[in-house]
Image (cartoon, rainbow, N blue to C red):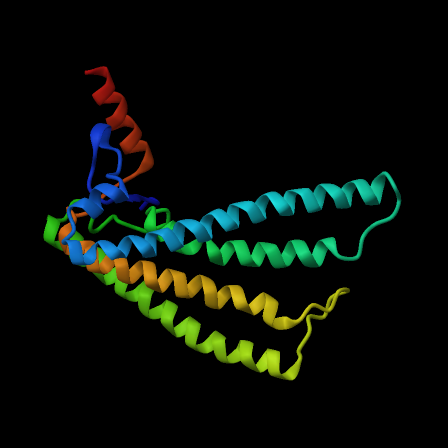
Length: 208
Protein backbone atom coordinates (compact mmCIF):
# COMPACT_ATOMS: atom_id res chain seq x y z
CA UNK A 1 0.00 0.00 0.00
CA UNK A 2 1.29 3.42 -0.86
CA UNK A 3 0.84 7.00 0.16
CA UNK A 4 -1.71 8.48 -2.20
CA UNK A 5 -2.90 11.97 -3.11
CA UNK A 6 -6.58 12.77 -3.58
CA UNK A 7 -7.86 14.85 -6.44
CA UNK A 8 -11.19 16.63 -6.04
CA UNK A 9 -12.15 16.19 -9.62
CA UNK A 10 -9.67 16.67 -12.46
CA UNK A 11 -8.99 19.58 -14.70
CA UNK A 12 -6.75 19.73 -17.75
CA UNK A 13 -3.87 17.22 -17.81
CA UNK A 14 -5.29 15.44 -14.78
CA UNK A 15 -4.56 18.34 -12.44
CA UNK A 16 -6.86 18.91 -9.50
CA UNK A 17 -9.72 21.27 -10.18
CA UNK A 18 -9.24 24.63 -8.52
CA UNK A 19 -11.14 25.67 -5.44
CA UNK A 20 -12.70 28.54 -7.37
CA UNK A 21 -14.05 26.13 -9.98
CA UNK A 22 -15.62 24.03 -7.24
CA UNK A 23 -17.09 27.17 -5.74
CA UNK A 24 -18.74 28.09 -9.05
CA UNK A 25 -20.66 24.82 -9.01
CA UNK A 26 -21.98 25.48 -5.53
CA UNK A 27 -25.41 26.98 -4.85
CA UNK A 28 -25.08 30.72 -4.11
CA UNK A 29 -26.05 30.12 -0.49
CA UNK A 30 -22.99 27.90 0.02
CA UNK A 31 -20.38 30.08 -1.66
CA UNK A 32 -19.73 31.73 1.70
CA UNK A 33 -17.71 28.59 2.43
CA UNK A 34 -14.91 30.29 0.50
CA UNK A 35 -14.37 32.30 3.67
CA UNK A 36 -13.22 29.09 5.36
CA UNK A 37 -10.82 28.47 2.48
CA UNK A 38 -9.50 31.99 2.96
CA UNK A 39 -8.89 31.33 6.64
CA UNK A 40 -6.98 28.14 5.82
CA UNK A 41 -4.86 29.85 3.17
CA UNK A 42 -4.10 32.80 5.45
CA UNK A 43 -3.07 30.50 8.29
CA UNK A 44 -0.80 28.56 5.94
CA UNK A 45 0.82 31.77 4.69
CA UNK A 46 1.49 32.84 8.27
CA UNK A 47 3.06 29.43 8.86
CA UNK A 48 5.25 29.92 5.78
CA UNK A 49 6.46 33.27 7.12
CA UNK A 50 7.30 31.55 10.41
CA UNK A 51 9.54 29.10 8.55
CA UNK A 52 11.52 32.04 7.18
CA UNK A 53 11.75 33.59 10.64
CA UNK A 54 13.01 30.32 12.10
CA UNK A 55 15.69 30.09 9.39
CA UNK A 56 16.82 33.65 10.16
CA UNK A 57 16.88 32.94 13.90
CA UNK A 58 18.97 29.79 13.47
CA UNK A 59 21.37 31.57 11.13
CA UNK A 60 21.77 34.35 13.66
CA UNK A 61 22.42 31.84 16.44
CA UNK A 62 25.15 30.13 14.41
CA UNK A 63 26.75 33.50 13.68
CA UNK A 64 26.54 34.62 17.30
CA UNK A 65 27.86 31.33 18.69
CA UNK A 66 30.73 30.55 16.33
CA UNK A 67 31.76 33.98 15.05
CA UNK A 68 31.12 36.36 17.94
CA UNK A 69 31.45 33.70 20.65
CA UNK A 70 28.29 35.05 22.29
CA UNK A 71 25.51 32.45 22.05
CA UNK A 72 22.00 33.69 22.71
CA UNK A 73 19.58 32.47 25.35
CA UNK A 74 16.39 32.96 23.36
CA UNK A 75 16.82 31.43 19.90
CA UNK A 76 16.08 27.85 20.92
CA UNK A 77 12.89 28.70 22.81
CA UNK A 78 11.58 31.11 20.20
CA UNK A 79 12.40 28.78 17.31
CA UNK A 80 10.73 25.82 19.00
CA UNK A 81 7.61 27.84 19.79
CA UNK A 82 7.37 29.09 16.21
CA UNK A 83 7.76 25.52 14.97
CA UNK A 84 4.80 24.45 17.10
CA UNK A 85 2.71 27.33 15.79
CA UNK A 86 3.46 26.75 12.11
CA UNK A 87 2.85 23.00 12.37
CA UNK A 88 -0.70 23.43 13.64
CA UNK A 89 -1.52 26.48 11.53
CA UNK A 90 -0.75 24.57 8.33
CA UNK A 91 -3.09 21.64 9.04
CA UNK A 92 -6.25 23.17 7.54
CA UNK A 93 -4.52 24.04 4.27
CA UNK A 94 -3.06 20.53 4.14
CA UNK A 95 -6.60 19.15 4.26
CA UNK A 96 -7.89 21.69 1.76
CA UNK A 97 -5.15 20.91 -0.75
CA UNK A 98 -5.37 17.13 -0.17
CA UNK A 99 -1.84 17.06 1.19
CA UNK A 100 -2.51 14.63 4.02
CA UNK A 101 -1.28 11.05 3.87
CA UNK A 102 -3.88 8.35 3.38
CA UNK A 103 -3.98 4.67 2.45
CA UNK A 104 -6.30 4.11 -0.51
CA UNK A 105 -5.59 0.51 -1.52
CA UNK A 106 -9.22 -0.46 -0.86
CA UNK A 107 -11.10 2.57 -2.18
CA UNK A 108 -8.86 3.65 -5.08
CA UNK A 109 -10.76 1.54 -7.63
CA UNK A 110 -14.12 1.58 -5.87
CA UNK A 111 -17.27 3.04 -7.49
CA UNK A 112 -17.77 6.79 -7.28
CA UNK A 113 -20.42 6.48 -4.57
CA UNK A 114 -18.08 4.45 -2.35
CA UNK A 115 -15.27 6.96 -2.85
CA UNK A 116 -17.58 9.79 -1.85
CA UNK A 117 -18.70 7.91 1.25
CA UNK A 118 -15.08 7.22 2.14
CA UNK A 119 -14.22 10.88 1.75
CA UNK A 120 -17.24 11.91 3.83
CA UNK A 121 -16.33 9.48 6.61
CA UNK A 122 -12.77 10.79 6.62
CA UNK A 123 -13.97 14.39 6.94
CA UNK A 124 -16.36 13.48 9.77
CA UNK A 125 -13.57 11.76 11.70
CA UNK A 126 -11.16 14.66 11.15
CA UNK A 127 -13.78 17.21 12.16
CA UNK A 128 -14.88 15.28 15.21
CA UNK A 129 -11.33 14.71 16.42
CA UNK A 130 -10.51 18.38 15.85
CA UNK A 131 -13.47 19.55 17.93
CA UNK A 132 -12.49 17.15 20.71
CA UNK A 133 -8.93 18.48 20.64
CA UNK A 134 -10.16 22.08 20.82
CA UNK A 135 -12.43 21.30 23.77
CA UNK A 136 -9.77 19.45 25.76
CA UNK A 137 -6.88 21.78 24.98
CA UNK A 138 -8.87 24.94 25.64
CA UNK A 139 -9.45 23.86 29.23
CA UNK A 140 -5.75 23.04 29.64
CA UNK A 141 -4.73 26.41 28.20
CA UNK A 142 -7.09 28.34 30.47
CA UNK A 143 -5.71 26.43 33.45
CA UNK A 144 -2.12 27.19 32.41
CA UNK A 145 -2.96 30.88 32.00
CA UNK A 146 -4.78 31.07 35.33
CA UNK A 147 -2.06 29.27 37.28
CA UNK A 148 0.76 31.11 35.54
CA UNK A 149 2.52 27.98 34.33
CA UNK A 150 5.83 28.51 32.55
CA UNK A 151 7.95 26.30 30.36
CA UNK A 152 11.01 24.68 31.98
CA UNK A 153 13.38 26.49 29.62
CA UNK A 154 15.86 29.34 29.85
CA UNK A 155 13.28 31.96 28.85
CA UNK A 156 10.54 30.37 30.96
CA UNK A 157 7.90 31.44 28.45
CA UNK A 158 4.26 31.13 29.57
CA UNK A 159 2.97 27.64 28.86
CA UNK A 160 -0.21 28.90 27.17
CA UNK A 161 1.82 30.38 24.30
CA UNK A 162 2.76 26.86 23.22
CA UNK A 163 -0.75 25.51 23.86
CA UNK A 164 -2.66 28.20 21.95
CA UNK A 165 -1.61 27.00 18.46
CA UNK A 166 -3.14 23.60 19.14
CA UNK A 167 -6.52 25.24 19.68
CA UNK A 168 -6.20 27.64 16.75
CA UNK A 169 -4.92 24.96 14.39
CA UNK A 170 -7.55 22.36 15.23
CA UNK A 171 -10.32 24.99 15.10
CA UNK A 172 -9.24 25.88 11.55
CA UNK A 173 -9.01 22.18 10.68
CA UNK A 174 -12.54 21.55 12.00
CA UNK A 175 -13.90 24.44 9.94
CA UNK A 176 -12.17 23.20 6.80
CA UNK A 177 -13.42 19.65 7.34
CA UNK A 178 -16.97 20.95 7.77
CA UNK A 179 -16.71 23.13 4.65
CA UNK A 180 -15.36 20.23 2.56
CA UNK A 181 -18.08 17.93 3.92
CA UNK A 182 -20.82 20.39 2.95
CA UNK A 183 -19.35 20.77 -0.55
CA UNK A 184 -18.80 17.05 -1.05
CA UNK A 185 -22.22 16.33 -2.68
CA UNK A 186 -21.62 19.11 -5.22
CA UNK A 187 -18.19 17.85 -6.27
CA UNK A 188 -17.17 14.93 -8.46
CA UNK A 189 -16.17 11.78 -6.62
CA UNK A 190 -12.53 12.05 -5.46
CA UNK A 191 -10.03 10.21 -7.62
CA UNK A 192 -7.30 8.61 -5.51
CA UNK A 193 -4.11 8.55 -7.57
CA UNK A 194 -0.48 8.72 -6.58
CA UNK A 195 1.66 11.69 -7.51
CA UNK A 196 3.63 9.48 -9.86
CA UNK A 197 0.46 8.34 -11.66
CA UNK A 198 -0.79 11.91 -11.96
CA UNK A 199 2.57 13.01 -13.42
CA UNK A 200 2.60 10.09 -15.85
CA UNK A 201 -0.95 10.91 -16.95
CA UNK A 202 0.04 14.55 -17.47
CA UNK A 203 3.07 13.55 -19.58
CA UNK A 204 0.87 11.24 -21.66
CA UNK A 205 -1.65 14.00 -22.28
CA UNK A 206 1.12 16.42 -23.26
CA UNK A 207 2.57 13.88 -25.69
CA UNK A 208 -0.78 13.67 -27.46
